[in-house]
Amino acid sequence: MPVLILGLVLIFMALLTPSAGFADEESVVLVAHPAVGTSTLNRDTARAIFAMRQRTWPDGQAARVFVLPNDHPVHARFAKELLAVYPHQLQLSWDRLVFSGTGQAPTRVFSQSEMLERIADTPGGLGYLEREHLDDRVQVISME
Image (cartoon, rainbow, N blue to C red):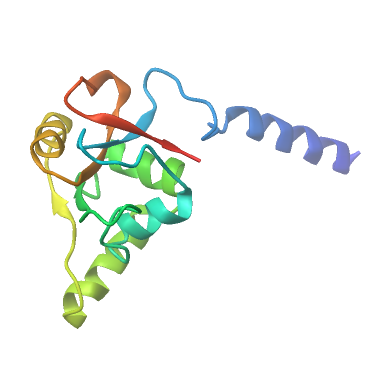
């Protein structure tokens, strides 16, 4: 009997947990400058770019990464749902690069409208937005 109850609880929790494979109107998506030649990224490459370990797009163009503040709910959803990491893990990665002198943190923006503007105006720009903030000045990058 306890095994049956545990099984039902696990099924119920799975139904409540959002899946990265399903996109709804409020899902967070990767977005890039329209001139970026890459239209898809796998999770490992996206994670490496956002952790600032990979500084170029797969085609060799310099990647310019923009992020929202750590306490912004869209940043938390992006990190957990698309990159499968916690926001504090990204921050630790950036802090290591900065304090060791081997790299720099991504550019922090303070709103999704600023994120949209900066990506649209920056060659190689990469960030994330809720779908409702998209327009034709940026391209959506699909996750494999």
